[in-house]
Length: 498
Ligand code: ADP
Image 1 (cartoon, helix red, strand yellow):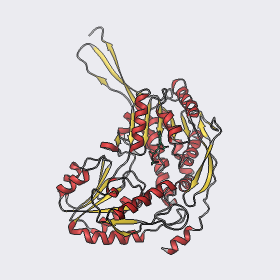
Image 2 (cartoon, helix red, strand yellow):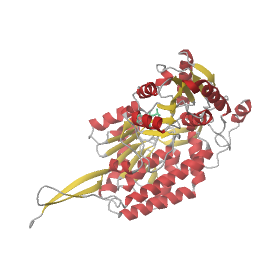
Image 3 (tube, helix red, strand yellow):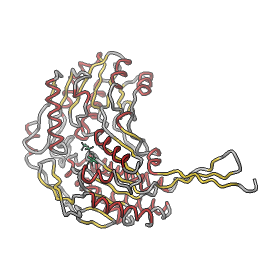
Image 4 (tube, helix red, strand yellow):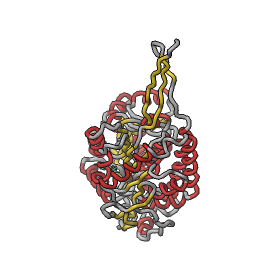
């Protein structure tokens, strides 16, 4: 790994230039009203990539009134659903055409491996928009029987202006999960990106306008939580709020929505997902999958399998092999081929993860491998494995959001069910077993929004995603996401001659 560290000293020049750094309001790129900007940094070096317009309350007002106008007067909800669908499909085509540039921006701003962005995430962005384009002209209400001479129907109408606040770990997938269903249902949008990763959403939103999106339908603002996110969450003219981020911030925005105009809120929040390796597991396969479940995306996944529960019969072998696998993890400049792990997104996350690692050591967990930074610049962290972790340790309770695997031992199924559920979170779980009865018992008992059996992080446009308990409210993706962006109007007409 000294070779790896050396390679980190010479960052590869990103194969793309930054063109869009202003706010996108009413179809135009404009400066912030205050004229302020903030730097967005390269996580490989901590150096400035670009200065980006910084929105505050006044810009949020401008963006919301553009979205309001596009909804109330503008063409969007009045277009045929087929026309909306066609624009979304053309956007997906443009995403495909510019795949590599978009992937390079995503990697530069976020630090994720370029191959992952180019081969999986950006194609998924196009796939998600095609999925939602497919729904646009298939949304309709019902004819309802009533006790009496009435003709009753329901209209499924767009809810209005959607405010959307997204995080930095999957900037464009979060964009798609939010914007896709909102536009398919005929809403207009003001989206606030995360301050760590503002670049890619601006780039693709420009493409969306090239695809024929009318002005004001999608407004994208860069800025910080308290100064740009909060005014959006509490805006009186925003009809619906969708948020992905930490549970702590989720509580804040839910409160702001309640105190302002009671706009409905969907929340996709934190997690501390168990990955349960049963006694019948093929240990090599279990190690590989558990490794992926935790380390994918530098460990920066809300659904990361961050509590690896291993049955005592296979525990020792598992720990040894999990350590070996972490040692083999290829960390380096995310623009290089064959890289599995790039830097963490920023210095704040980097410091926070190192603090949790210190806490794990102090609380008596066994540090099997890793535990420190890698290289001398940027935010690279050694793949880290703790064994002998106990449920009451902080590293088994808090969301670390980094490349730190915690392995815990269990004896029987009832015990592991109880322990897996003993958390305020309920986002996801992994189950690894060949025994169908064991799998069924676990999938029914775990109080989580997704159970992956013998797989993990299998995402698909049609599979709903969301949390039980303090991991969130509502579901995104799939058919379930549409109801977040629709109002139901009952229309009742007497039948005169019945
Ligand atoms: P993280 O800790 O992973 O950065 P956050 O929940 O703080 O997660 O951030 C997720 C998103 O929420 C970002 O776009 C951020 O700017 C925004 N945000 C943070 N604080 C607030 C706030 N007080 N009001 C509204 N949005 C916020």
